[in-house]
Amino acid sequence: MNDSHVSRLKGSVRLIDLPQIRDPRGDLTFVEGGNHIPFDIRRVYYLYNVPVDAERGGHAHRDLEQIVFALSGSFRMRIDDGETKSEYWLRDPRKGLYISRMIWREMDSFSQGAVCMVLASHRYDEADYYRDYDEFLAAVRGRG
Amino acid sequence: MNDSHVSRLKGSVRLIDLPQIRDPRGDLTFVEGGNHIPFDIRRVYYLYNVPVDAERGGHAHRDLEQIVFALSGSFRMRIDDGETKSEYWLRDPRKGLYISRMIWREMDSFSQGAVCMVLASHRYDEADYYRDYDEFLAAVRGRG
Image 1: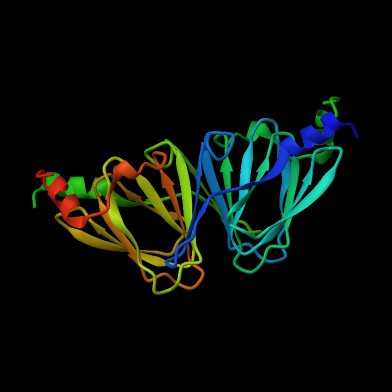
Image 2: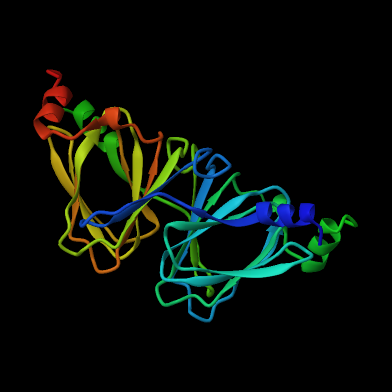
């Protein structure tokens, strides 16, 4: 693995520390599109009522960029860029996991009452999804 | 109170039902700026670690529009347009409370572990705030 490859990996998935305003009346974290994160926010979605044994994700995107947050509780994100796999445990509302295009992701190990919020760079587009892992692998390795 | 006044009130604060994709692996709700809500999403912020006896809010905005969600737990929003007061109990992640410009809002009665998420039409701007109720009242009644 050469340096440029390391840089590409670092750029494609990384934790972003968001500002936090601590207050005896509760903590507040804010995110502005194009400011704290590298894209404008076109879509926000959130997962809730997730059973603790659920597995979510299992797809990649052709163009979509996202930031994933655990706003309550915790869960695991398993990340795969076609060459390297890594995992992140999200449990701190101040830390968002940036995921670029062409990254396979899976989620599991949800705690009771976990809430996952995602900020996305584009509106929903089914044509943007890879839902088949082998198809994703072929594409990311330049054979797609 | 005449009809046009009623319409104005309805338009300035209202619950918006968002789509929900129910799934045995957890429920998902999504929001697209300019589609499900009447503005582009420039800023997202969220409140967490809120003590159950906390009171938040206590301000109005000159121009900002917002949608407020209870992503976990529940809380009360007390709304005041300078002429009429109302209150909403937020507890359903599918329902966002739209709040237009020039609306005084206060929040309290947070349940244990409540998470409040807000989508906003503009970036943070302290000059957009009314933090003094009397000043807000004078402005909204046309004497500001």
